[in-house]
Length: 93
Image (cartoon, rainbow, N blue to C red; front, side):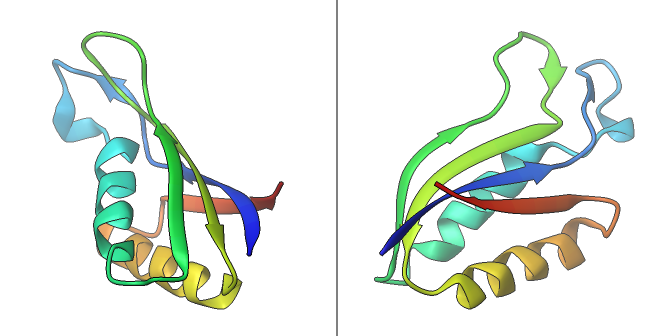
């Protein structure tokens, strides 16, 4: 299995204007939920946002997998659902 860093980019914003933001934390949470049924994807850590009243524009997920194509398929389906203005990048560690 290989180790990867997955960066998910939404649209950050202020907590007073959530309608103008796309929370990367929510997208990352949904990704983690979707991967629980796959035995070949192991989530190591998730980090997103560290400020009060700020909607995070970026989430970082460290994981292990032996199927990069499956990982890309899951992430692509989330971006279709949450909007194509969002994006992700996968970096092999």
